[in-house]
Amino acid sequence: MELSTLFKATKIVETIENYSIAESNKFTYSVPTNINGDDWFYEDEQFWREVITNPERYWNKKVNLYAFTISDWVARIPGLYWANYSADLRKHSENEIAKQSKQWIEFYPPGKSKKVLGGIGTILLPPNDEGKRLLSISSSCNASLGIPVLIFPDVFDSLNLKQGDAISIKNARWQPLDVSWSKRFASTQGIPRGCLIIDSPDKIEINQRDVPVAYHPFSITEYQKGDSLLFDFVYLTVDSKLDNVRKEIEEFFKYYASKENRHGKYLLNPNMVQPIFETQYNSPLEMQQPSEKAKIELLYKRIRNVSFKRTTLDKLIEILPHYYDSSMAVRRLAKNVGVSQAIFQEDNAASMSAQLINYCSDENKIEELADRMIVEYPSIFNN
Image (tube, rainbow, N blue to C red):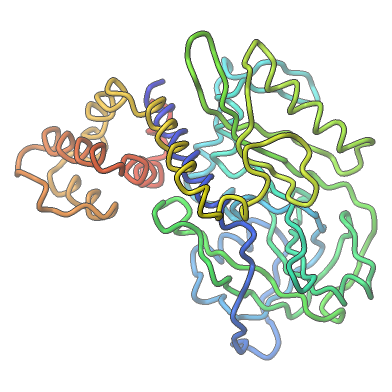
């Protein structure tokens, strides 16, 4: 349990850091590498496997997609769901299920956290200053699994586009955004941050209207359990056809924060157009204010104090040599998280693991270390 808490805290810090840049959807125009797109995609997974494996091949390239459904909501890290390690992170145990029926499952906070760690969770972004909107399209009608699209205002107006429209896209350019995901974390460093540019109505064919689509408003909760202060992810699966959807979301998050005397509060707001419930930060712009920098550092310190306790680090020292079982493997891990080889005194893997972990603890680099380990050995999360 100690290690799952450490890895979860690592992803909470990563989530806060990447949330702070979520509204940055500017890009520098580049000439497309092909006149007409000859790549056709029919499924979310097909697209993301190709783009994650060969990012340079697809930048600025025109592509085509058949039968994808629009959602107003976008995955917090589009493509994260399809990363090689994410399926292992989403696995839950029976004791993490609070309630279950034939139609739905409610998880306790640790179970919900695992789903968000593995790519579940969406946000709703406002139009930018030019009226362009970053939305998502999905072959499986699931925004957490989908592909981001930047749609120009005249395209919206001329086609009267709405959430639930099933569309095909022709010759849309896959464009890198100017700000990439945090390079501090291996788990998001490898996810290309881009979007399909829809700058002309000619690029969209509407196949069907009013198709149900699922999305997952999420947040991070800081709450009490007995005498302990804890942090976890929370999300809700929402059907776009649900009546009184805003009220249902609001009531769920309110109920979940107070259930079992948690006295929870939420840190991040998933709806940046019209916040649904009270959070510490309603938008990434609030986090970028100079006055907030010190407050965010205090928040990180609070998360580290709760999750990176000495007993947890001792457990990490015990486990790490089972996965990095030679001095060369430990040195490679250190290099991958930006730690100088000069910190080491040559010894066996166990001793050098302890040297690396103690150094990272002193330098506030435990989250980079843990995140790299999650990417390379996702099963370690369940220790």
